[in-house]
Image 1: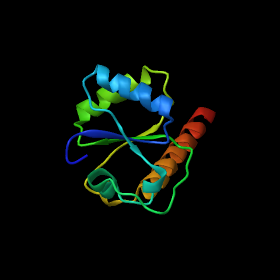
Image 2: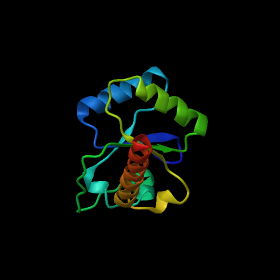
Image 3: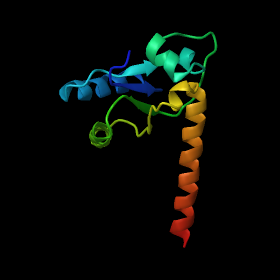
Image 4: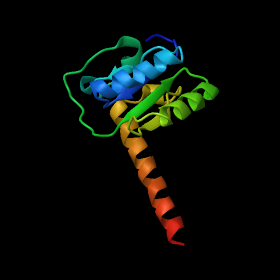
Length: 128
């Protein structure tokens, strides 16, 4: 993927990925790169720049879309476009200088933890 802006997806079916890529093509963006289960224990840097594989598999039913080298305005635009589709709602994240060194599984765990905390806060505030 090099340093070019890009989108990475985790746990999208072939059909969902095709729909996503059609949308990206409509707006002139490159198609998304799939993070394979054999890449789940690798760092984001290894996945993005080396496109390597591991002999260890990662399994998770969570859906994730990562934005790499995309300006904030572009990220917001893309998220809004994705929300207009019938695609499943993923967890979104931007790959940062820091997170690019994380194994994908660690980022996934972090995203799930943050979502769960936000859900608990939301549940508490709706009870009040």
